[in-house]
Length: 314
Image (tube, rainbow, N blue to C red; front, side):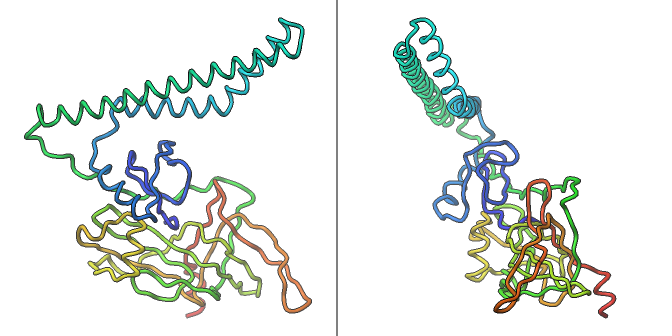
């Protein structure tokens, strides 16, 4: 699964790696679960019902305004300048008309934002007042289960390459459950906040049978390791609790069941991704060319075991 899925979209109830917008709905109202106050803010929102019409209107207007400010404002101001310059046959006239058009646009945008905000606030107030009057016996909505987004599908590209060899990791990670030193890990299970399928990658090298070296320098990618044992109920220690908190697991609300897979030093591995040849220092004066695999949109970095090499080694 993808590494470090610490961003949450409460509208879609999905987690994903750090991004500015939700990959599913495109919304920008995200929660960074690495921050304690963001986790506290997100929890009650997961108990809310689906977006109502007022929220939909606010989000639609937000998208329209962002596009307008990015492209439309300058375009309309430029058109006003040309029209004023043609009408008055003077640059000063064009500048004056352009300034008036810019001021008018700012006033209209502020007025539109105010109207939409007022509608959203009034809708929330009406909902809060009407709920105890008309739905006094209704149960509060259940908390939605948060799911991690599936790993991205690799698009066909000639830049994507595969490399097989054995792991050499100089700065290993500690796996969250077993606290093993490893080059990569994958955690799968269930928690009160929803399903967990997360991963971590340390920079490491893959040494081929012919001595060639491939470098995994990034810590972003997809770890496709098979689980080594079924999920079991665990009592999170401080390190595991910190890891789970950053994924919105809310482990303090109930039991946690987890399974772990790790990629250890010397194990056989296959890595796939976009390759770049980079010159790196080798000793005091020498240098060498190494292949560096990285994760890019449409061509994710994928790490999996290499069973063929395992069989040869045994």
